[in-house]
Image (cartoon, rainbow, N blue to C red; front, side):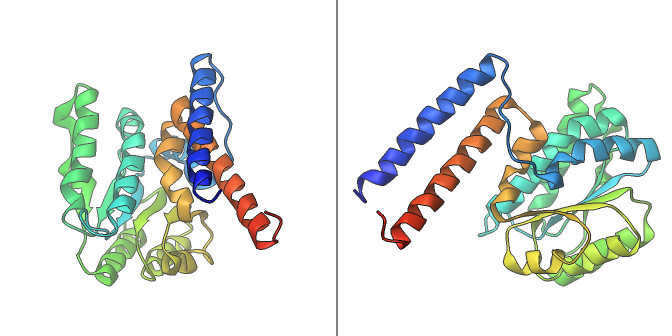
Length: 243
C-alpha cells in the first residue's frame, strides 16, 4: 500500500488538473484561497501610478545557481507578472537585488516589457539597482532607500534571513504599506511582527500564478491545495493508527 499511494496521488492530481483545465476552457475560473500578499499587488500598481511614486521590490540575495535559486526565480517571475502593467501605467517599480546573478535577469524583465509596448527607448537601466553582496549590507542599503526615497509601497519577496527586519522596519517606520513573502524561518520570524501582508513558506511559490491570474495557473494552485489537504489527512490517520 505504501508503494501504491504515491502513484495513486499522482493519478488523482493528473485527473484533477485535466478537469480544472477543461472547466477553465469553458470559462469557469477556478477559485482559490486568498493570498493578500499577492492579491493586492495589481491594485497597488494602480495606486502607485496615481501617486507618481514607484513601488520598491526587494528580491533578496539568493544567487542563481545556489540552493536559493528557486526562491529567486519565483521572485523574478512575480515581478515579470506585473511588469507589463507597470510600464503601461508609466510608473515602473524600483527593484533592489543583492546578488550579481539577479541583476541582468531583472533588467531583462523590464527591457522586454518596454519592447512589448513598442517603446524600447523608454527602458531605464536604473529601474534595477544592485545594492551589495553581503546580506546585511544589502538590507541596510534597501532600508536607506525606504527611508530617503519617495516610495509608494514596498514588496519583499525573495531569499533573505534575519536581515529582513532592517528592511521591513524601515518601511513600517515611514508608514509605507508593504507585502512580504519568504520561505525561510529566520526571515519569517523577522517579518511577522511587522504590519505587512505576509505569504509564508510554500505560499511564496504561488506568487507568479496569483499575479498572472490565468485560469490554468489558478487551477493548478487549487489542485495543489487539495492534494496538500489530502496528504495531511492521510498523515493524521496514520498517526492515530486508523490507517
